[in-house]
Image (cartoon, helix red, strand yellow):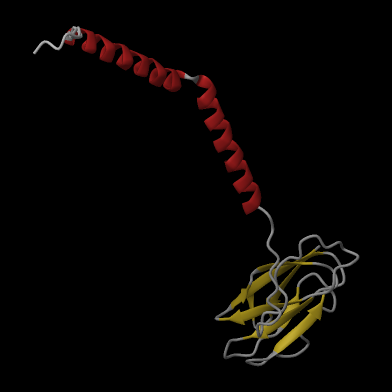
Length: 172
């Protein structure tokens, strides 16, 4: 089987050494990536930037206007409005089962609050601190009493028929 050409001298040890050298280079490259502090810091900074961006997006106020819903009036805030350009709003406080809801309501001067009686018994709303804040007569079931708050302050009120049933309007 001698064709006259020199046969390469094949030695398995040379192949193993070559494989070992390639493996060593591969391990060095992999360990460099794992030990690289620059890449780790880049990932940490990227995660923090994304976290800050998402927190900022979630804290943006959302304007909600439920004026189309019956009995709700305009509840919600208007983002970016100034006191001069703000239109007066109508809020509704419901009375049922001996409780005014909401118990504490924040509004602006010039806004109107409708007190709706959703209980089966008549109520009489009387203000504790504000002269004229009085329903004057009974508010029967299903009816309401409306009052426009012109002055700023914190005004408590109660049901005259049960004085322990009270709530507060905060006018800004």
